[in-house]
Image (cartoon, rainbow over all chains, first blue to last red; front, top):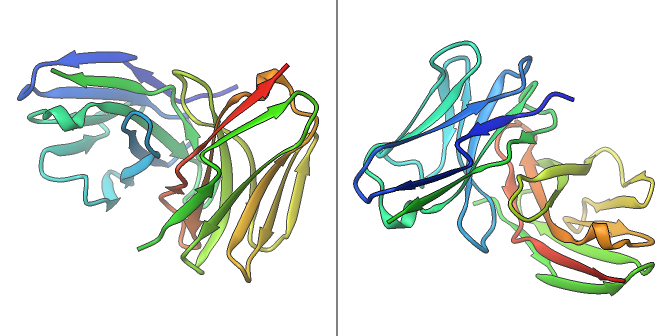
Amino acid sequence: EPEVTQTPSHQVTQMGQEVILRCVPISNHLYFYWYRQILGQKVEFLVSFYNNEISEKSEIFDDQFSVERPDGSNFTLKIRSTKLEDSAMYFCASTRQMNTEAFFGQGTRLTVV
Amino acid sequence: GENVEQHPSTLSVQEGDSAVIKCTYSDSASNYFPWYKQELGKGPQLIIDIRSNVGEKKDQRIAVTLNKTAKHFSLHITETQPEDSAVYFCAGRHNQGGKLIFGQGTELSVKP
C-alpha cells in the first residue's frame, strides 16, 4: 500500500540552527501539506503546496519557514533559525486531488535545545 | 476563522462497549469530515470519512454521522477492543478543498 514517508524520525537541533525535514509523498498525488503537532495539542495546518508553489499558508508559517519540491519525489520543509517553540511533531501529508483523502506520514519529532 | 471542537478529551470504556466522540464545526462551507486514529509515536491514520451529501456512513464497527443543520458530526465505535485504544481526531475541510482543520483529539482507552 502506498504511503507517505518522512525522514528523519527524530531531529535534535540547537536553537538558531537550520533544519530540513524531508517527505516523500505518495507518487501519484499532486497536493502536499505540512502540519505540526505540539506535544499534547491538536494537529495544526502549516502550508499547502501545489504545482510548485504555495497555495495556502497559516499564520504559523512565517518567514522562517520555507517549502520546496526539489525533484519529482521529495517535498521538504526548512526552518531557517529554529526557536525553542518550534519543538513539535511535523507531519507531511498528500492528496491525489484537492478534495480527496489526505494521507499522513509517520512524522518527524523536532526537538530544539 | 474556521474551527472544529471535539469532545470528550478522554474516554474510557470497557471492552465490548460502544464509544462515541462528537465534533462541531463553525464553517458552514465545510463539506468533508474525516476521522483519524493516532497511535503513540505514529502519524494520523484515516479510518473513516463523510461528505456533506450523506448523513451516515458505516464501515464494520465504525460509523460516522453528520448533522449539517446543527454542524455536528460524530464517530461511533461499537464492540470496542483494546487495540482501539488511541487518540482520535476529527477534522473538517472547506468545500474548496485543501487544508484540514483538526479537533483537539480524544484519547480513547479500552479496558480489557
